[in-house]
Length: 68
Image 1 (cartoon, helix red, strand yellow):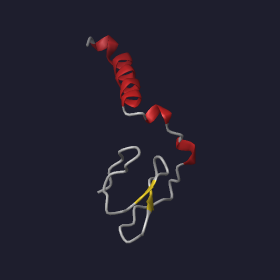
Image 2 (image 1 turned 60 degrees about the horizontal axis):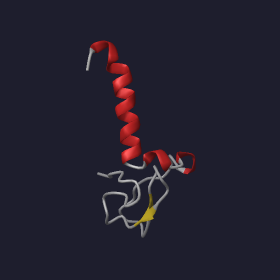
Image 3 (image 1 turned 135 degrees about the vertical axis):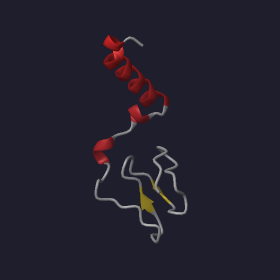
Image 4 (image 1 turned 120 degrees about the vertical axis):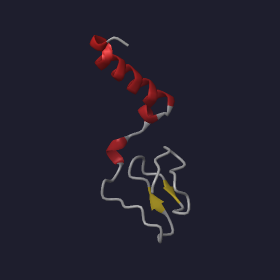
């Protein structure tokens, strides 16, 4: 990639990444930034996609966000 094209190349790669990981379909407005990954809880809520899952799993099964 030419230096003059770095910014647009980064943008295109970022858009492709979001599309390939389905992150472009998530509604982040419902995500709670106050959520904390609590390994003692029965269920935890992913702060990125609001998916509820067992804290025994270190990766959100919905969006792939990793904890730890």
